[in-house]
Length: 228
Ligand SMILES: [Zn+2]
Image 1 (spheres, rainbow, N blue to C red):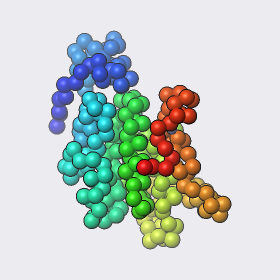
Image 2 (tube, rainbow, N blue to C red):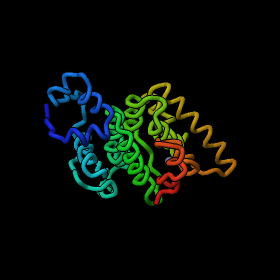
Image 3 (cartoon, helix red, strand yellow):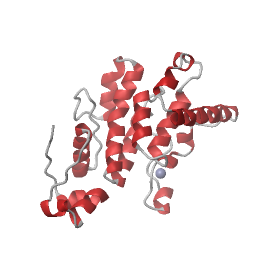
Image 4 (cartoon, rainbow, N blue to C red):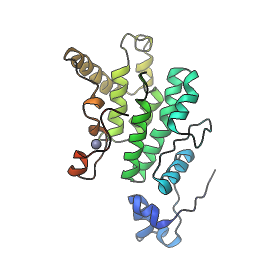
């Protein structure tokens, strides 16, 4: 199904290097003013349109809780199976991040990471990313991606090696070999960190997972290691 969005060119070109190149270059799109995007998650695109006009992240989940805040979505899904709940809660953020990455919108990637980080670390319970979350970031983002590292670190930190899923081979069957190796490296580091009483890596330095415009911005980074 094709859906058409009418957006202000100056606005989207300001934020997105992809749209800027397409609409201000020597391409057909620049003449027609129409950019066709294949294989786009329509809910993620709607969240992106919302971000373009408000610079606020509204991650709609697949059950149609559109417009709800991430915290409200988490609340609604509290009663559901934890792993499922996690996937549903994290997926909208990951899909929006993937779209921001594809359309080269650095600011939206940063805002999405901040919203995800805040919502995952509210309250006292630990959140384990699902296999679905892992496969999305593993297949959709480059190895240098901060979000990919973040999700891998979270999974490695919160997974328990004695869990049923590890013993039965479930984890091995659901993830790619390289992805599994990255997770196992995190598990090894986690045990070493525990010996020395170190905090999770995102508490030690959350800036390793997201971008900065400059060194100055990094120093004054608005994302605090300890989420509010
Ligand atoms: Zn930072």
